[in-house]
Each structure stands twice: as C-alpha cells, then as structure tokens.
Length: 119
Image 1 (tube, rainbow, N blue to C red):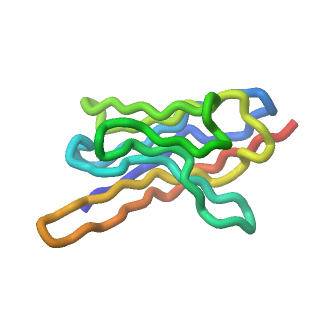
Image 2: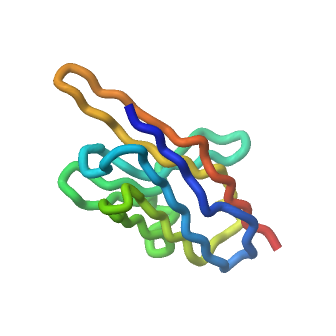
C-alpha cells in the first residue's frame, strides 16, 4: 500500500503560478504511473500529467507548455509546476500512482488539493 498527500493548492489570479506537491509514504522509485489528475465541478476526472513507464512524461494538450511534472526520489515527492493559470484550470488536483505486484495492480489516490483561478 501507499499513502499520497498533496499540498500547494490555493487561490491564484489568472496568469499566476503554483507548485503542487505529492509526497508518498514509500519510495516512489517503486511506484508506476505517478502523475496528476484533476476534476472540475460537474466534469469527469482527467489526466493532467504523468510519468510513463519508460521514464518519459505525458501531458494533456490543454496544459502543454504551461505545466511541468517533476520528481525528487530522495524526498518521495512528485511536483506539478503550474504556470500561466487560466480560470478553466480551476479544479481539485489529485495525485495518483500504481502499485504493481506479481499478480495484482492497484491504483492509489491522494485526497486532492483545490486550485482556484479567479480574479
């Protein structure tokens, strides 16, 4: 099992920036598909950015060039730098990962952190 704790959300004006953090309760080197998702009111949860199995990254088209996912294995933390924020980025942002066993694969989610973009 793993616990994920997000932080760093808040209220920011359009064009502003935030850095979201997701700290895991175990070594993130052993976790798969660590990434960020978001869910706006009345909408489905959607992928924002994720580390792929090959060590690369994948971003939603709507955030490319504005958001950057990174990781610090020593701190068991994944970050999401969000720049040039728009009102449509307003959502609860969730951290997620997969734990893969010999015969099992389980998804884990954090509790979410609210990002509100408003003037």
